[in-house]
Length: 306
View 1 (cartoon, rainbow, N blue to C red):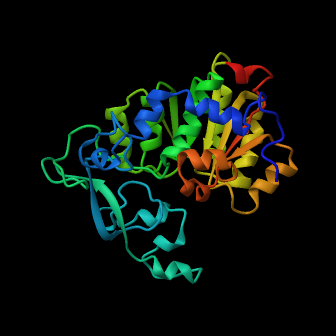
View 2: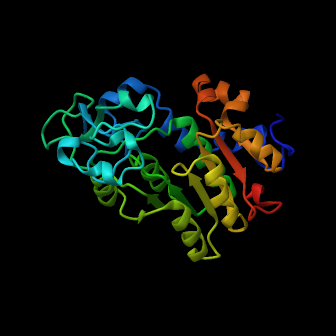
C-alpha cells in the first residue's frame, strides 16, 4: 500500500503531517515533557500529559472487564452487565466464547478519596477528578496538529471511556462534543467540573453523530473521531456525514484489513503505523497503535494551507 495517494502539498502526506505536527511547540511540550518520570510523579494533566490523572486510584480485580454504564466496580454496580455491550459481564456465568471465561474480574481506575494517596503515590488533588485514556501522545499530536493546520473548530469524539482525550482537545482550544453509549459516572462528573465547555451526548453514536453533524453550524469546521464504533461500522456512519466533515479519524484501524478497505474506496488516508518518519520521531511503539486520518468531503483544495 502506498502512503497515501496524494502529493506533499495536498494534505495527509507524510510531509504534510510532519509539518503540521512539528509546528505546535506548545502541544509538543505538553505531550512530550523533558522528564516523563517527573511528569508522572509531580505533573497534573492541566500542564503536562499523563495517561492517568493524579486523583485516580487502582481498584484491583474487582471490576467489569468491558465497558459498562455507571461505576465499573462490580460491588457498586452489580446490574451494570444488563446494559453492557458484552456477554462477558454477565454474572450468570453463561458464555458465548472461550475467551470470555477468563474475564471474571478485572482491575480498573476510580476516584481516590479526598486526602488519600492517588495512583502516582502523591496526595490527590480535588480537580480535575479521575480521568484516564488509551490515546497516547503520538495519536493526540496527530489529531491536534492536523486539526490546527486545517482550522478545525469543533471535534466530535465518539467513544469517551476515561475522558482524557476529550479533556486534552478542549484544553488545547477546540470545541468538543463527547459521545458515549455507556458513560462512566465519575468520568462524566470529572469532565463537567474540569472542562465545562465539553458537550456530553449519551447514546448510540451511529444515530447521534449524524444528528450532531447536521445540527452543527455551517461556519464550523468539523473533525469526527470514531473510537466507539470501529472500522467498517464506523465508516458506514462516516459516509452519512462525509460531505460536512473536514477530517475523520478512526482508532484501532489496522484490523479487519481496514487499510485495504479504505484503499479500495479510494480514500486519501494517513496511517500512524505506515509512516516511518512519524514513527521515528514519535516512538516506534506507534507502529502498533493502528490509527488513521481520512480526508473528509468538506476538505477542499487549499484547506490544507490554512
